[in-house]
Length: 239
Image (cartoon, rainbow, N blue to C red; front, side):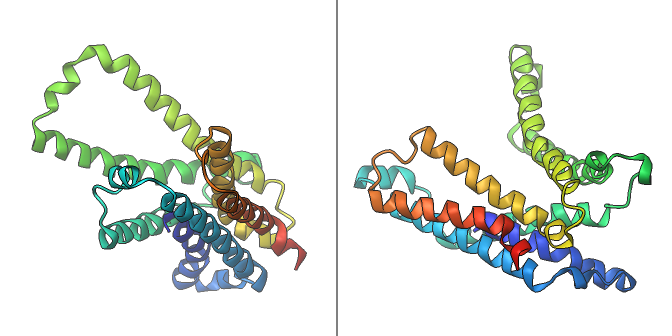
């Protein structure tokens, strides 16, 4: 639900909001039938994989189900998933609004999203820092920062997580450089990124045997979902 919301709203909100604030740019014209079709097919693929996940959950033993859903709360989970998807989609809105913050022809295509990415992630950093400091105060854990034994470990894994997380957006910027002749795929690029995130995460899930023990029917549904997501990445260009 979160990924589907992120993929759909992240693709659509940018042109819609640009049209509201800068109508002279005619940003809505980029939301062609092909783009909407790409979003719909992406959502379909994510939904199919969601069905596979549901089938996998249904195959768990009663003990495994109780362990997995001990904090189960559908309304709260749904609200958080939708909010997470909406806010994650806003990341692409920031990239869309900041797409012109660069040095024009002097900036290689692969680096043109760096300024906007920095500004968007800076806002995220400040928000998270404030919340972490609030939790430090609430839980009286400021003294944890004095524990020098974990500093090197924490810095290493924070840097690794940041580098890996950012690499997807560097890849997005790099990929856009090859899509400049297709306005449809340029508009759909964020949705393609989200679709491929789901594809590769599930491929790794298969490799790491996270789906071990599932029925052939469940695996078949999963593979169909992956195929649909791959098709969604290039289908709009064929319309």
